[in-house]
Length: 275
Image (cartoon, rainbow, N blue to C red; front, top):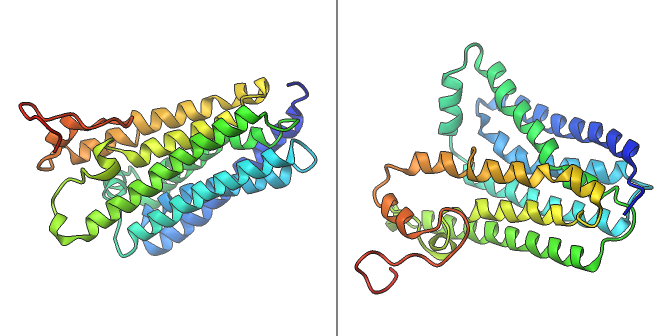
């Protein structure tokens, strides 16, 4: 598909960067006033939603209205659900231990250091990872049926894994009888990280929605690749498992449960059935 409006898309990149930075600046001000920087995790999903909405406005007169509205709605549903979940989970808690440990190593002022290494970095990642959402809204012509079906279906699998996994974990943690135990039920018996696997599917799904445009696909491919690396090798799975490694029963859990891609749990050695 030819005719991709590169000049308009280039201008949109600047608008998207401004939207992501604005969300992070507002979040930083709130964090400084409350003394809790963990709220930047809530801003992650909100920033993606802001980029999608700003791009929808900026792309008026370009692209296909169905694709433009679809990617905006899919991004907003994913981002706002994630933000609401993280906000509920963190209500009443103090600083996240990850940020506490990071800021304890600050070479100067804690807030200035947090702004540089947390807020600016997350804003830049939002801008980069959102490239399929931005590019999709400038693709001329409607999406093909296979692209529409594949992208939307993979996005739905991802959101489903995240929402169901988060709900299962919340119910598990709410039961006092489970205190100190490892969550190994439901989706968590099939993968140690259903929420991260869900994110993986969401961003590959959004990327698929531009795959009938070689230009948009080329400029957007970095997005799911970066998100996959972050989830599997970066700040997602690797850091969480390092934190969990000393928990009683975690070694046994990792031995029988997939580290990322879902599969049936392995049978314990010497046992004839799954636990």
